[in-house]
Image (cartoon, rainbow, N blue to C red; front, top):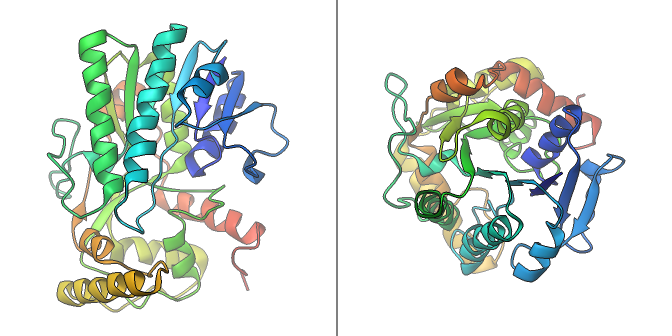
Length: 329
């Protein structure tokens, strides 16, 4: 049986379906009292618990032979806070305690592509180099980076049976929050004034879910894999979104200085009002940089699928329409 954390998020909801399709039995950790609409009706064993409750986590994971740790706080506002390190780092330490206690056969840890040093389209970033630190002022990135280093340490020093996968920017169905799909919804409703100078690597969330299953089944202990697909600038990505959704993509090129100025005002607004701004300074800084990565290692060694970005957009958009997030008309 597999013990899964983070099963109700965008990735987790797709991962649960992929694991069930492969005939795995699942025990999914869910926070007490939390409504999980994306998992309703699925043949899983739901157990209530919290990553910060170490003893409860030991009880919840009892009887399992494998672990997939996908839970994390990925918020970008507020950009800093102890909660990121408590959940993303301390929570991972508690999962590792369960791995030791129960003699888990294999664990897959879901990291973040943002932990690696990005590159250009011509020379995209690889698994060869981790960031030294977060440079954007986002404790999400810093906490995931520290958790990544923790996984490396316990594998090297204790030989724990762990493989690490690092998704890039995921798009697809079951984005109930919504999370990454916010950018797609904004494009669909015409609320994005323009595109910034940067770009990123985009991937269908279902490919990442399949990649996790492949890592669980055949990735060597201590191995690390960036799971991504297409390196596209924001202008290129919005053009695809517009074509798929039948809307006009943003056509205004926003200069770097304007993006950063808007981010500064957004951060000031957020601090003054306590409300989440549409764009903050850390997010603006991310948006003007290139975050390009290569999934070649995962494709070569695991057989990571490479679904076209347009299909990822269509699958996400169809789910949003079907679930009342946007009116296709």
